[in-house]
Length: 425
Image (cartoon, rainbow, N blue to C red; front, side):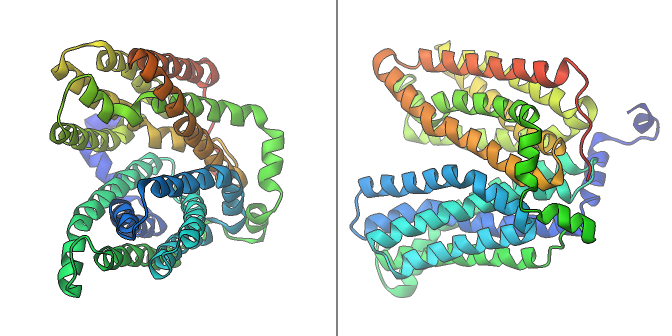
């Protein structure tokens, strides 16, 4: 750092130097997730409206959401295993293509059975693709730029989703005018969702030009060994437990309060939908800002150190958010808390995958995905029961306790002793 100052190298210059170090594979990957993110943004905004326009009710929508989410949770481990066997290029192409196929089939054959079947396919495809992304970043970047690539890819994905949401809001009107039907008619939504499928398919194009990073007979055999991930799991259960347990605690804590923040702002602080929407929008901006800052902090202080400190700092702001009656302070605490917690996601993912042999990275990414999904799947049920009987304070208190436990585990597992050296293979 002193050498950088003497040479007049600013953090911003370092930031752009790290971006310039991105490999050809990394740049193609960013293009692919941008296209995919726009398509998924359109899909998530309009699919529910499409189903309702067909005469189905909200109960059926809930069933579809449950089917897709549970499929992703149950399939996370086998999809991670498949990602290790296929290698990342094939896995991401297969996952992206499966997503597009699921959307198209639901548009062509909109029956109840087809919707259920294609939401299973959608859960499998999204799980395979998302689980492959983290290992791909680790395997296609050097230690210097890795955290930057991970953070920028997540920020780009969120930005692409935002663009998809924004464009998707206008697509039914444009498609309705083109097809001479009402804006809320089924054909308007169907043609708009066709754009989502096209966006997903366009993401396949840059993925086709990716090169598998590992070459040579020996490396290929290591990556494609059917039993390598399971063997690594058998030989390293303690390390895997240390890497996954903090994520599980964080997800359980977040699941107690974050899915209900709109309800909290309305019922506890009496805010309108417009105000709540603005709060959420600025929260997204705070998240993006945190992700941009995170790589520079990780470079200077260390990955796991930044994760532990930022998540620890989030706890007092969570207390303000849940227990201070002054709305202005609550909103400020919400922005700071969401930035501090989300900025650490790409850093910890990078740190965890750096500790793992290449043959098992997909499996570890799947375990991490399962841990996160578990908390968000089951904690809201507990939180809803608490809210009905006792209000929000117990939920916020539970979140603070779980966050504190996770931060303590970072210190116990990784900071009390020198952190393990990254696996660079």
